Length: 249
Image (cartoon, rainbow, N blue to C red; front, side):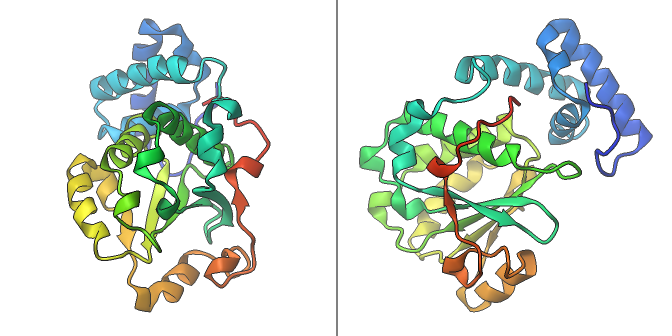
């Protein structure tokens, strides 16, 4: 079990609550001992330091994890069709050292989507990006490029499913989501998605005006790490080319 060291800013009172949370969840599910204190702290923070609510959330996570990734990860063959579309790619790191990924919703077509595979794909790419988070960091950055997005790409059910997976099972992992090249028609879809996003997550979605795109991107990401298609020097890596298996969460 990891110690509290290296876990970022936290007071003694918060770590005492983490200890209380650990005692509570381990009494109900012995597998909880396999997760470190930083993981428990994320669940605690996601429930505003309410130990009972955090415990319920964490125990639900453990059960869910056994169901969706019984071997500790989602196998590539389970999401092969989703991977082939290159709708998610890995980037470099932002200025604070957080890894980032780039999503291309215009490469997703609702008519071709199988919901079970899509949900597995969401778990697959969250596992991949979380496995890249270095010691001393707990979050990742996401750039969502909506260029070319249209009605054939609109998939409210899938978007809500992805957000719910992130909120319920990867709490406090998203640092920021930069929404770029946003077409006006996407805002109609966003109005339907927004009510399903919890208060802790809503402020992390930042809609970037086209006029300030480069300024915003370069404030977050150094040119040496910025993807080539956005004017930087780093090639994107399609998710299917990220061969390493993620660590079990």
